[in-house]
Image (cartoon, rainbow over all chains, first blue to last red; front, side):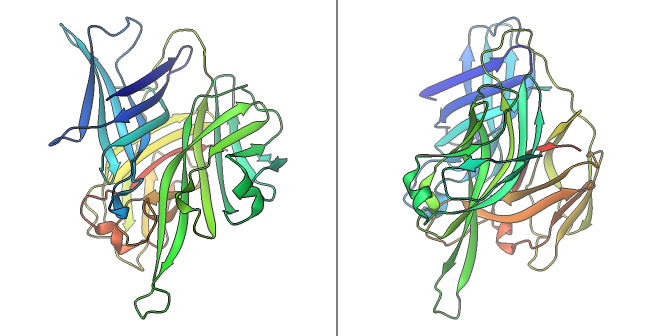
Length: 104
Length: 243
């Protein structure tokens, strides 16, 4: 993910995201790894939308998709995962918008 | 309900269902835009002027845009494809809702925009909270399809729903997709697209069908069998206003 911008709105449970998702082969998800998540970030899932970038075959242009995002704190590191859910999976994807943070 | 005061893309007054508080605004609307009119051609961002909103500015949200294209009009196999994609929307100030002008359907006559969107206020400090999921059951009435990743969050004034169909072989032209959503609030009446299907149009996006939820009943009155194409996984993701 060469470009990655997230914001969690304090006082509420809302997650805003702008991600240039390149993905990887063989699995329809990608992770961002951290040393540690901030202490005040609870475990959550959030659903956001995205659309694929231009491809030579027109049927694959701007495919709308949904992604579920989850944060996990492990003993040695932490990660934020973007996993494809609905729509035709075609990458790269511009993931954007806001989603509520839902208890895992 | 909000009635828009003006817009910069040549549309008449737009009726928008709304939920508003200090932290977010949820909007539901469906309207058509003539993309060949001068006002639309001259704007960079679609702006809808409305009476005072509860927040000054929002983070980006998502909404849907669709259009129809008739292919091979003079052939016996002439076919209309309804395609849709998702686009960005945000609140610029207390009186302005903005929608990304994403030109992938500008060669056609008309686009449809669906707002099923949640606009969060930005720059707030405070403890992060998480929403609890609510129980929901999809009971198929017509067309035996089963939803995956079925998630409902109910709050006073609004709700969030997500699901997608992984196995779509039961979808047929002429047979509605109809289901009772047990647990879904019965005070919601919302229109939206269900998107996911192959097409041969000369524009982007994926095939969509019109869908609605009213009195807890999910309905796609005219499904398209092209939604059965492998890996297209038609989905629903909406924020809906209650009441």
